[in-house]
Image 1 (tube, helix red, strand yellow):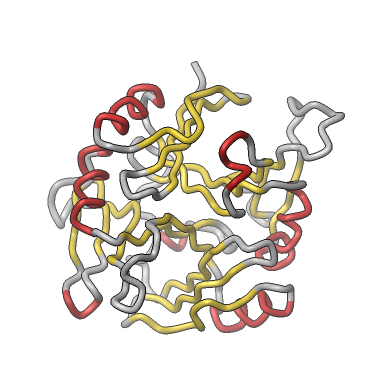
Image 2 (cartoon, rainbow, N blue to C red):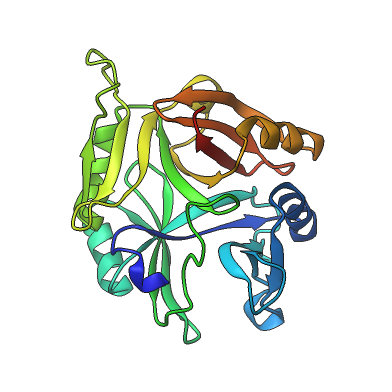
Amino acid sequence: MPTSIPLGAPIWADGNAPDLASELAFYTRLFGWTTFDSGEEFGHYTEFCLGTSAASARAVAGMAPNQSDQPDKPASWGVSFHVQDCVAAASQAEKLGAATITHPMRIGDDLVYANMRDPDGGVFGLFEPLNDAMGFMAYGEPGAAAWFEYVFDGVPAEAMQFYSELLDWSMFVPSWVDPDDPAPYTDLRVRESGMGFGACRAAAGPETELPPQWLVCFAVESVDRVSARALELGASVVMPPGDEAEMRSATLASPTGALFGVVAEAS
């Protein structure tokens, strides 16, 4: 339940799409997700779920069609972090150097949300749930979000200082990292609970040409099989399957260009 998601931790992941129907078809075929359309009142925002009926469905992510004033906005994924007071958190983020994209808004009786841009340019959300039905209903299992990486062409710890102050994170460099690395991989945890949820790493290869961004990673049983299936469905591989520490991962781009990751335990 959302109340078990610590403050400061990822609580939701969603994306936008210039062609919602084709994007939904891609992800449902890739992950076996079921979709639930919220209707015209909420702009046909669609939830991806594990489970085949409304009674058994567990929400794992969402997707919205591009707004009419931005029909050609590139497809993308994003992450939102759990905050106790969205208005106060957005104000603090601005004081720390962030820019507001969308000011805090109440969405029905469900949540208060703000869309922000961090000092390095990465986009993220602040999410204040108003009831127990908000946020991830499945997490860390195949088909659900499991890991969040900030990909940055620079020193990871420097980029994460902003989030550490805003969301009370702790950062540490894992023991397997080369001590001479000038931009070492940095693990991220919620300080109070100790929950590890992601990392910041220096961009590599094609990623160096991309702006700083959060990469939403979904758990799968086989990174290699899912990557191959994604190619069959029209996606592309940005970073091929590879092992790092105890994790095997790949970075993929949907047919419309939205970046996302797939992860599994390294064999």
